[in-house]
Amino acid sequence: MHIESATQEQLTEWEKELSAHYDKICQHELSLDITRGKPSAEQLKLSDKLDGILSGDYRAADGTDTRNYGGLIGLTCARKLGAEMLQMPVSEIIAGGNSSLTLMYHAVVTGYLFGFAGNTPWRELKAPKFLCPVPGYDRHFTICEQLGIEMINVPMGDQGPDMELVEKLVREDAEIIGIWCVPKYSNPTGVTYSKETIERLAQLGQIAAPGFRIFWDNAYSVHDLGNYANLPNIRTATLENDTADSVLQFASTSKVTHAGAGVAFVGASQANLDSLKSQMQAMTIGPDKVNQLRHSRFFTEYTSLTEHMHKHADILRPKFECVLEHLHNALTDAAMGAWEKPEGGYFVSFNTLPGCAKAVVKMAADAGVKLTPAGATFPYGRDPDDSNIRIAPSFPPLEELDTAMSIFVLCVKLVSLRKKLGKI
Ligand SMILES: Cc1ncc(COP(=O)(O)O)c(C=O)c1O
Image 1 (cartoon, rainbow, N blue to C red):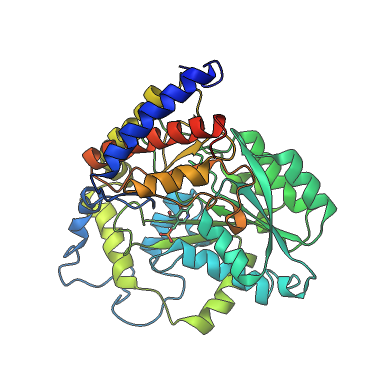
Image 2 (cartoon, helix red, strand yellow; image 1 turned 90 degrees about the horizontal axis):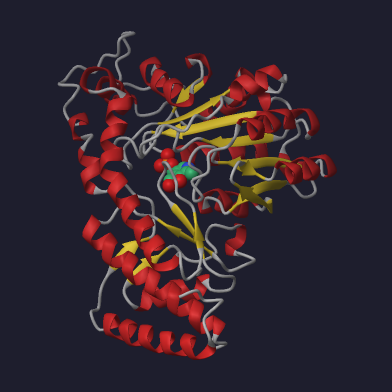
């Protein structure tokens, strides 16, 4: 039954029926969680060979004793892995610790306190601002919020951010000093930026303030579920536009090997790397090179990155299929929401009818299914339509996900009906 074409009586009857079903489920006292995009235990196990792979041989190929201090920019062999993930030359990569988010935070702080490549530090501006394609990744927004950098929403389309708006805003306001981008299998929409979007982003450096930087968080560069989505190379595009300094790229092995014990990378022009290094050298003597060497050996002696990611995809694919099947079966004919079918990454982005997301999340929580808080995918936690919910299928076992999704779609239906009936 379609929510728009059903009669008032039909809607009332439908709501009564689903409410009774919901009340029964609440008695089961479930505790299910589809909040954060964490790899499952089965996925983590794929990389357990990291443990012991060095067998007491701590020397890197270039002779570095990885147990000792030093090597601010990381081991060359680890930087090669970053270069493969980001499709950049090794000379433009720094291999750091376990988290790309830390490197992003570090990069924002560098721009804020010291400025990149001799440009004005952002803290000296009256109102420094970042553009935030929405829905987006909550932790990007938290970095800006913590530093008092204002955030401006830019809608995401199926080709990437609305570039018309991005260009207009950047032209009009010289205090826009950054934009967050997750260019492949975007968190949470799953969109991969088109060639045209990337070419236009690469030209921003010509119209934006000199200190403007694109934060290119390529967290899902190798995380294909089946078909391989081709992401045009932004570095190449910036070189063609003489704007190479306008981009900072990030990636990590968090969702490749062990999420809490991987290696993270930042890739950038020499001028940007110099700015990052000058701050880093006050902060650390060097990263965990033992772990970097373990990763390098793992991906040369044990498996290739491509082969390894295929194994992840085999585990993740049925979980994504489960989510999409529930959404399709329960909601397509009813027209009670819209969602994307991602070809990779870690999320399914779901839009309820306007004004329903918070109520769905609460209703699911009351039935024992924890979802990412509604609004989390927007700066300041404010979704103007109260509509977007991020579903993260990776962590729970398939049976639990199946149960969680059946409750999720039930809550979407109930909230949509109650909204239509004017009950909420
Ligand atoms: C877009 C995006 N960037 C970064 C991260 C975190 O990366 P890391 O573990 O390297 O800090 C995540 C994790 O969910 C993410 O979705």
